[in-house]
Image (cartoon, rainbow, N blue to C red; front, side, top):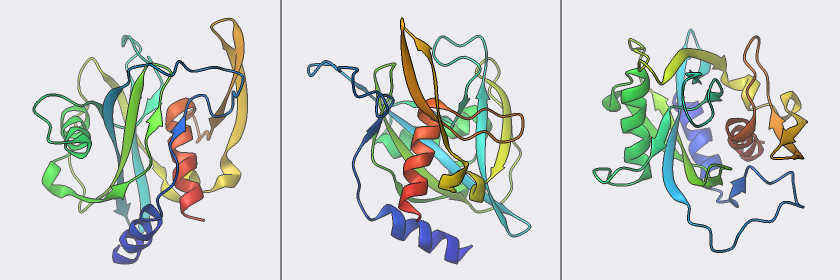
Length: 197
């Protein structure tokens, strides 16, 4: 576990440039004066039987933003949060029942801009021990695990397209079994995979 933590820390310390939901759509023009809301998401890594796994959620289909999509636990920064890391840890506690004191924060990825107007900071955290997962009713439909090796392997990503607001939009996808991981979550994972090469 210490080797995994040190290799992730080292990779995250390399810097890098921000990403966005529009990376694969250069013709889409973003307004230079747009106001982005700050958010933090946690990428919790838990090692079970020697295998590092990433914990992800499937959002409720009743939510206004990204219903039914695969996501990291997380959300917008509230007034009571010290920073985006605190927001990510708080949201993970609220959404999946992850105790904050079990998480060793290893670092952050460059920010990611979403189509919904958020500037998201992905926080990578190592979960020291297993815990009882308690999905937040009304927000989280399911909590599941994916082998970290799967989502950090660039060969498992593909570029796909669909129509959005009247035009074709391309995005990354990294499916796993019945889970279609795409959009912002896949783009942030792709950025992480590039750092781990």
